[in-house]
Image 1 (cartoon, helix red, strand yellow):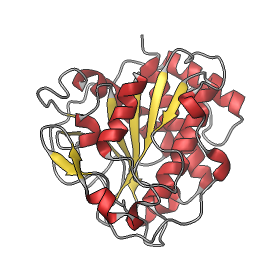
Image 2 (cartoon, helix red, strand yellow; image 1 turned 30 degrees about the horizontal axis):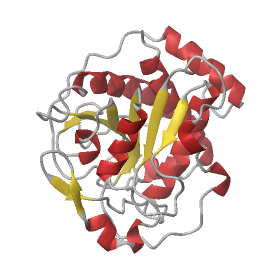
Image 3 (tube, rainbow, N blue to C red; image 1 turned 90 degrees about the vertical axis):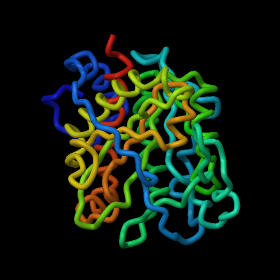
Amino acid sequence: MPVSAPRGPRSRATRALSLASSALLLTAACSASPGASPGDDPTAALPLPGPGEDTDASDSPREGGEAASEGPLDSRVVVIDPGHNGGNAAAPDEIHAMVPAGPNQKACDTVGTETTSGYAEHEFNWQLSVLVRERLEADGATVVLTRDDNEGVGPCIDERAGIGNEAEADAAVSIHADGGPESGRGFHVIMPGEVSGYTDDIVEESRLLGEHLHREYLEGSGVPYADYLADEGLDVRTDLGGLNMSDVPKVFLETGNMRNPEDAALMRDPAWREQAADAVAEGLASYLMRE
């Protein structure tokens, strides 16, 4: 949306026009140069209960990733990867199986984290991803989600990357929420570092994608960049299979810290999720329309 417009829920048509206007008015991408900081998986694998009720059965993804309408993004393909899945906790053998993650192997997937009140990351990731898809489709983009609902298991990290590769996506983003220290607050964007033979051809474009998302999410979500890791909300990792196995520009967006009371309160709020989805969609649109 234009920078002067108020944030908050709006009609689908208004969002479409706003995304286009916002992307055309944006200035050049930020020039921050984050340092590498490989470490643990980007979300904590806390034990969660088994899969619960579907969060919104009417929001199943459009088959084949068809665009919803014509618009400024009608030639663009975006892959949205909602991290984890609702059935992971009940399938330990499947999600602990080792799969390719670049030069090494890692577990197929993890369970994810949750708020202290039990709001699961996999549910939040799904809800936010569906909202982002709605906004991008309203501007004509073809959007593919890496999972069909919040009831299944996986896909594995290499399969998630493969979905973006098969779609020949112009951009891919993996939606997550961190499981950091309770005292730490904020979001961060994880971009791929150079891994010879794997990420050489996507590092630069992924950095640009990450910077656009970082700028718009910081502006629109009301969440500050993380104060407990990364460099002003930008991080580079070489150990994540979801990035290492990607052949298209891809980043992880850790939308906040679920273990922090302030961030958790926002994530549980449906109105804030609409606002956050606006910010994510605008970041993607500004990247896709930068030329």
